[in-house]
Image (tube, rainbow, N blue to C red; front, side, top):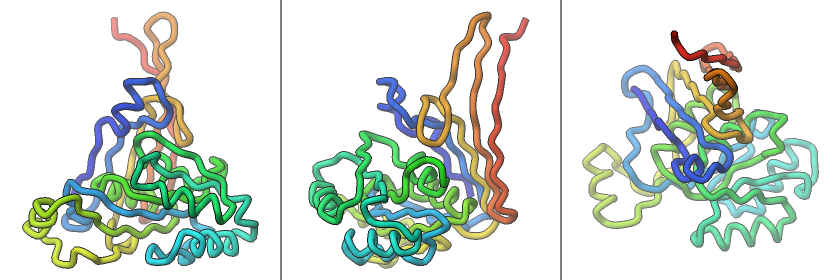
Length: 234
């Protein structure tokens, strides 16, 4: 199985905003959820909070559970949420619970991965984004020892019917991390613009360029950060 997004965060790249990445994930045949082109409600946390989340519970319940797992106050948590009208109630609930919010305009794969990296200042990702991007995020979360749950959210009857033809039998199913990405998973991403996870492409004098990438492997738990220098041929 191969899941790929050549440019996650197209609008972010076009406007020079953070967290645009190029990303690919691979696994044994049949080990990724065959996600239809629809939405997915997601919750992502790092390894400290593994097993503490429940996507069927209110935001305040999950924030309290994560705070307890991380031995901190809810006020110390930062939640990444896509800035969309559909998330108005979620944003209000998170604010009422006392957690900080980092609103993003596009691209929720990099923030999902950043939630599993201790030094990013991101503790959770919550809300609805693309389902294929959810599978990409799940691959990385598995490699980093985090936790994730997802539930498909269809925007139309046509999307639901297309998903059924793709093998989705239960439209209301809650997918655990190991159901989104199973087996020997590998994940790789390269930063396009600077972000919470990776530095973006830098153009230097003389035609030289620098990049930062991350390569992960679930079977060994290995995460490698790769700094690259690229020189113009000739």
